Length: 256
Image (cartoon, rainbow, N blue to C red; front, side):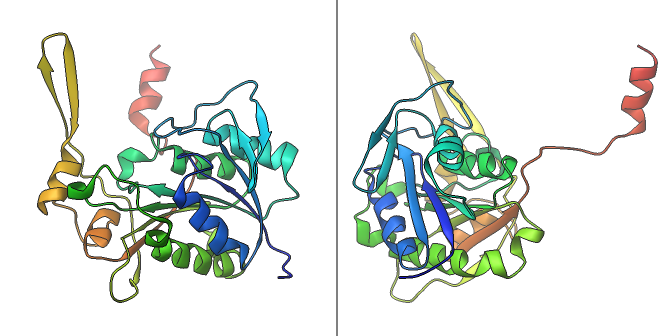
C-alpha cells in the first residue's frame, strides 16, 4: 500500500501484547507504521521518563526498555521518519474519566506526543469488571482497530487537530453490530477507598466497582457513560494543564 501518512505506534502493555498487534495490523492498511513500544508491561506509569533506555529490534519495529513516554521521544527523535501522527494502544482495559489522564501510560504517550507538537490518538478497550483480569484475543480488538483506522484515516485531514491536541478513545468489546461513535468529555465522577489489613492497605477504585454494578452516576455526554452504553467514546483533549488567572491569587502574591 502506498501512503504518505507516517504513524508512530506505541503502547504501555508492551510490544508483544495482542492489542498492540491488532492496532499494528489495522493501521498498516492505511499508513506507514513505525512501531516503538515498551519491551515489557509499563501500565499506569504515567509520563515517567528515563534518561537512557535500551533498544532491541523486534519483528514489528523496536522494543524499548523504558516507558511509553520514552518510546514517543525515541521514536520521534531517533528511530522513525518524520511523524504525522502518534497512536498509543490498544490498551487492555478502558482509560475513562478525567482522573486517569495522568496515570495511564497509554494516554500519557499521547500527551507526550502533544507536548512534542505531534497530534495523537490513545486507544483503549473496555473489559467489563466481571471479566477482569483477562487479556482478550487479537480478534476481540476488532472494534478498536476499526475505530482507530477510521480516525487515523480522517482526523488529520478534517481539521480535528486544529481544535484538539489528542483524542482519548475508549471502545467496547465487539458486539453483533458495529458500535456507534460518540464525542464525549472525561467524566469527573471519582471515588477511591482504602482498607487496612494488618501491615498492608488495599486501595479500591470505587468508580470501577460501581461500573461493574451498573450504578455509576456519569452524566450524558461523558466517556464512561458512552462506553457503558456500548458506544465508542472519543474525547478531544489538550495537553497543557492550565487555569485562568484570578484576582484572589493576584492579591495573595501582592501581599507576599
